Length: 488
Ligand code: BES
Ligand code: ZN
Ligand code: ZN
Image (cartoon, rainbow, N blue to C red; front, side, top):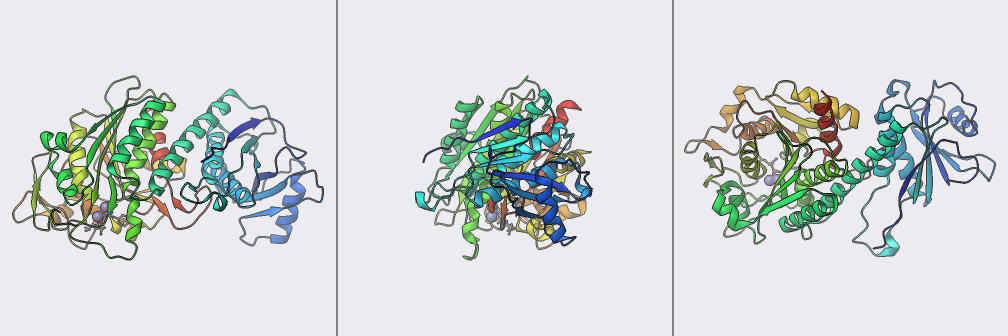
């Protein structure tokens, strides 16, 4: 497929003639007039709309030598949050693409700080992304080739650096989205490993992949148990961005490339969605890619246990007791609670790396979707301040997080009659017992948080910078958190 040239260019003078086909303006109702040509059009629209809640619309000026204007209306309370810029830029570029336009400009709010520049660049990259690689050419729509960020003032070096950072992060997030979108017959554990190796070669991080033989020799018994119902070989992918060295920040991602539930088979309806059960893994690949491209000073290690979860005559059965890398015995009550099994091996391995902190990301529980819907990542942690750090990062990146408790009373739900722990905890508090299961494999003095992204890794509808489908959640969130760790 032909790769189009896609540019985010920065200009410090406003477009008057048709140097772009569409011009996106974030509009705050209480903003003072700047006297620019597009204000008349935006004002006409607002007069027609009054206070009625329409958030965005195309308006046209009479003159033919001016671009179409897309007004993205923001409530005054949102200013000057970076997320409002990201959302306006994303909605604008998405709308431009739907019109078949090939160039679009975004009017930066006056006095924008570096965070707003970064966010606007991210919005332009994220908003028009979609995957058309499996369609005939005629069914595809192309993204605008040129995206411009316009400011009425001189653009500082800080702003330019922020735009570059935003582009790199958004491109990494789009690569994550692509992996999550691709079907399970393409994205196998091997495909994830090959993709990690390719990204590592292209962007400069190292990879090491353990296949079945090595997993057996090293004792990754929980990962192997999940994989034993499938003919696809499981693997454990380790990626490293060295940075300036020191204790590594370890990111772990659930890489179940298809989750049929195993012997505890899922219902047929909606099962196709379970191709996205590797969204945590895909986010880890995106995080390493961006870490390398941005030459982050922190040392970052990515770990991905990868497998399918299928039923067959060789599959692990309910009631089986398995022993993983930690040495703990696990009674597998429900083979559909497989994510926590493979993560238990990965978390055990992560601690051998003497990490500064471990963040795991997983589409772990349907209960997370029940609890928080599609608007927040569930955070489970017993480490002081970590939930707040992640929440602060999410407020910057527009990926909201919300904590759930790991009180000790919940632990009893995982007591097994014959093993150290069982893999499900009954009906109540499913996301919490999932988190508690993982916590059992993490020493108390290790900084660790589990992010359940079951509700946020896939979006049923488009909004702001998010097209329908894979979201790529976690990539920018973890980077923003890392940045705060580095400066704090
Ligand atoms: N991959 C699923 C969780 C999931 C459900 C992710 C819906 C995204 C959307 C996970 O492996 C799973 O099946 N969990 C079970 C756990 C249960 C058996 C304790 C679940 O949530 O039903
Ligand atoms: Zn499952
Ligand atoms: Zn799963």
